[in-house]
Length: 323
Image 1: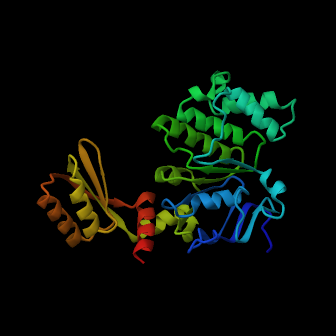
Image 2: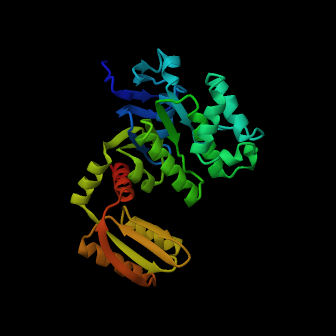
Image 3: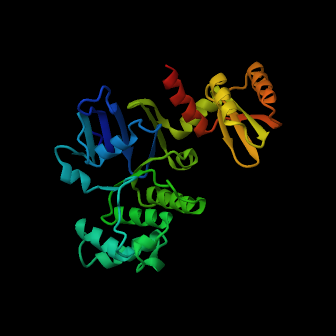
């Protein structure tokens, strides 16, 4: 296989079959990523996202296919490949909680063979970048989840990798911490030229940051396209109906709605229920409203708008389930 020298990451027909498993965890996945690009790898739980990320990181060996990092085959030239990678994996212990932030970075910097003379400045620079310089001497066990995640990203950047792998980077973060992290990721791509692959369930994050969207379901590609192309395609093809209902809807009624109207999403808080139906078919919308009235729901508002990435994602993955 001839690789494109401009690609920082390249996957060619990558498959992972675990022994004894009836289906492949990942099947014939291909994509590439260049300097300054962000690719959002999206899919339901168990779709193959984390397996894909771990194969790119050199932690799992593909059953077949080729992964190259800066031109290096991650299997045959693993050490040369992984030196270009920084990774923050969801669920992994990326830090030592009894050490301070500075001690963590000095330790991981030495493991990554950052020159000793450069390490103190590198540590301070990264702590400043992620907004933790004032907490340099605080034990990580006393950090909030958001602070720990920022520090984990700083640790992944110690050796100045060309490629950054972020597995669910905003999971468990509050709104402010997630927004700050989003700004940091954008800066790493736009100003530092990092090639960034992120997995996320937060569609707004993917829509704002990603240049490419890759949707995987049951180990297989559902769609791979530039973000703007994907959204334009769905803007042209469909609008969605939005309804606001007073209060919450009984869970049994929600289940009935989801059975009667495949693709519908129902989210509630204490005061409102928000319903999105991926259709503007007037007859079906009237049926939906009639069913809500039968359930005693008070409809406050009905409207239509263009589909967002979240609706595109749900439509794509649910279509695969139906098939």
